[in-house]
Length: 320
Image (cartoon, rainbow, N blue to C red; front, side, top):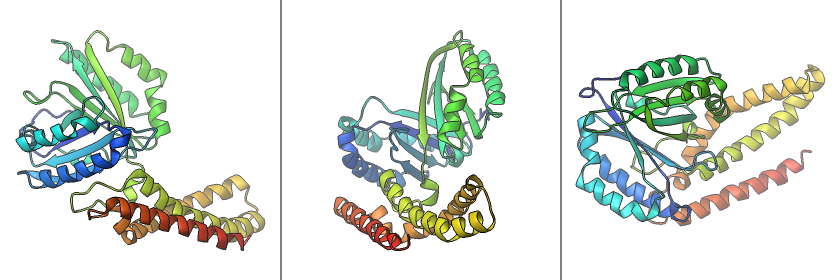
């Protein structure tokens, strides 16, 4: 999708930044403060923060949506943001990737995994790049797991690179497309008109199951999401396999194990779509702590979930 009218419609700032591992907690605190500042900035609409999910995604991905490109640029150039950047500099590795996506900004990264690509084009080669973008858009739309694509030309006076975002349903499908012979052949065609190219991966993990906090705090950390999903995944899988998959699907219906297992996976995903949001609301005090004692609550929540793991193991052991 090629947008050329940058004066109208909403705009989303997409920031990918790499943080030193020992600074994760400090950066999370800094990000919460930045969220509170940008939330009061004129023209701000909403934002989302996706912490790293190593080893696949090592960057923090921050999206900030504004009523217009002008409002987004005003925030990027504001004294308040510049001060925040100076405070964050010692925590960062390298430089941020900062992009502005116009219109429909809320749908920039809705899929589980996306590739964000920025390209600097040699002067006078814009038409060649546009033609190439149309060819690769047609090719990648046929790739398994493809879920969407955005193509943004430069915004005069704001950003001088061309931006494209391609979205897939899984990391495996995205990597398969990135490594495919069709894409490699197309990429080889860009050398005559490309001056520089950068690609970074952004994935949401289990974010679609967790509510976006309304108070400016970042989303739950990936390890917290993983622990809560496991807390519900284990009993669902155990109970289904013990009381339904084995006695009914395999022994009574005589389904092959592979098919019975597939049915169990489908049922599990459907149940988690309801159970995880329900549980995340009950554990909001741990997932989204809104107090100075963040570390204490994180430790307490992790200890509670671990204790529930142990109780389930003891209880389910009696059933086998």
